[in-house]
Length: 125
Image 1: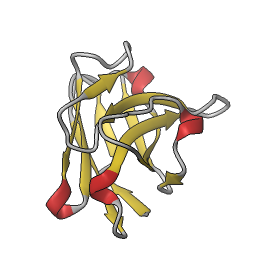
Image 2: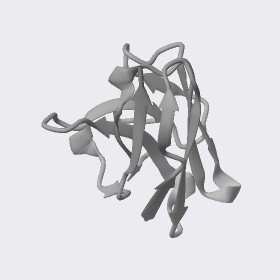
Image 3: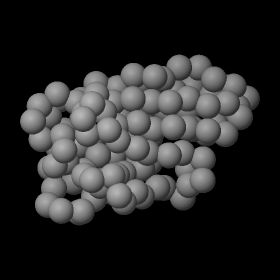
């Protein structure tokens, strides 16, 4: 599956952004999906993941209560709604996909085998 992110930009602290990731290919509905982020000089880290049916979600502690991951299988799209943004949320955000069995939903970078090109999110203080 090929993935293309959009929706990044510059926002003030406390603001909101909604990232989208559109997939092509035939395996979207049988794939777990996730968002990761990477700051300059840092490793790519987990942000959020959602099961293939959308019924199960996972979040990094740093974004819990502020970010929401969701998906629309008929549109082959996964979203990341980001509220109450902080300067430390500044990073390039990547979506990722992994074909899975049932509700298995990986949360580690190494488990995902399809990646988008990333979209920059910058939060000013």
